[in-house]
Image: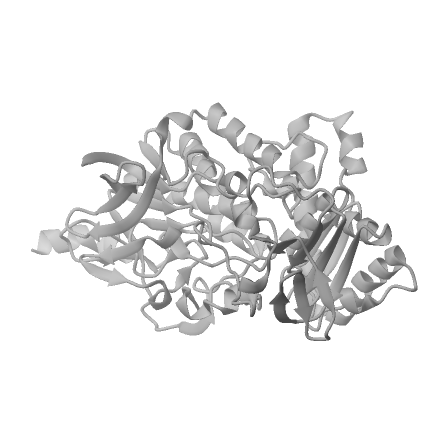
Amino acid sequence: MSNHHVDVLIVGAGLSGIGAACHLTRNCPSKSYAIIERRQAMGGTWDLFRYPGIRSDSDMFTLGYSFKPWTEPRVLADGPSIKKYIEEAAEEYKVNRNIHYGLKALDASWDTETATWTLTTLNEETGKKEIFTANFVIGCTGYYNYDEGFTPDFPGLDKFKGQVIHPQHWPENLDYEGKKVVVIGSGATAITLIPSMADKAAHITMLQRSPTYIASIPSVDPMLLAMRKVMPEKLVYTLGRARNVGLQRMIYKICRQRPDTMKRLLLTAIKRRMGAGFDMKHFTPKYNPWDQRLCVVPDSDLFKAIKKGQASIATDTIDTFVDKGIKLSSGEILEADIVITATGLKLQMLGGMSVHIDGKKTEAYDTMSYKGIMLQGLPNMGMVFGYTNSSWTLKADLANEYYCRLINFMDENGWKQCTPRDSEGVMTDRDFLGLESGYVKRVAHELPKQGSKDPWNVVNNYYVDLPRLRFSKLDDGIMEFSQPKQKVKKGLVSRITAPIRAVMG
């Protein structure tokens, strides 16, 4: 069993984890760090998913890092391009040499006496365990189980003679040319798969229990292309990022404050593209915009595939699978050679790693989110979780900047431990995601909670998080700073009174 010690240990080498390492290199150059990654390559989501058309559903000016401009013309980038972007960032900041691949994080144990985290990892190839110790841990594991996606218990599935695939485990070189394909689901994965497979499949059908709100955006932003001809790339990226943050926030705000107006705008745009004869029930959800995530498609590709007759939508529930396809509750049978279950993810915090504080196990549902980036009662640990109503990396960047500020602040003041503490009992029953999506509702009882007041509530608002994470006081009276083997001292008052108490004995 080998042992490693670093100042900061990052769990996960995806978009967030590589970003965390780059921020540490930029802002805490004296700190040693390591990344443990279960897979054999960096990229996280963008290395795992290999289905046709895999792409971002956020624009790259906000999904990209704050410190590294996205220079390609496409607004919604494909998976391989995003993975390449992450690899370029890692190379620029020499992150590669600090990544330990093939290690699954099993347990993180905090020892107050030494102010140290001990992480037990498993090398899944050799079966050997490796131990890492660190003063600070940043969890960058995303939010879902990499081992398996969510698939409902479909009646009669064993009768089906075709192939059943979950997008999370896409088989290499799948041959679907000339075959009938049914995609079960209506989220981002489904609306990406339909137009991407439509040209080669005999026909592809999206089978949905309920529709999703979908908006079309241009694949290339003409304004930014024009700006690139006369402005430096970094300036174009900064301006484009600021504009898109504003647009995202404005759209979300309208959705929440004037849902009927936004519903009318979204549905009118689709009706204009599909034509007056199209049955709009397939694009008319029963909920309001942004009760669940709003999906986007580039250049109306989904609508074009349907208009061409290459694809279709069935809005119904499944009665049972049959040997040649799926029988719907209406009695209709959808014939299929291949069924793709784009039915969602299984949520999982910290990659499934268990957490112990001084020997006592801590469950996520017993904790509360502090500023959306740390958890109540967990010392020296960050958990990067991006926005649910905007680009993931906007929040990840702010979180990683905050951790760097926090680490430097502790060094400057001689502290070894920092722990968010709730002294007022403000925890509520609300989970920290606050979404109505099925994959959230299924595990809401297992998720960290929100509080009834700041900083325990999750705002999902970049304009609020920007000042409170980048500029606000770290010593806010809630974050407790302490030394090993010493009674916890809270905030500024403790620093002022400590010398007096020492003199007084």
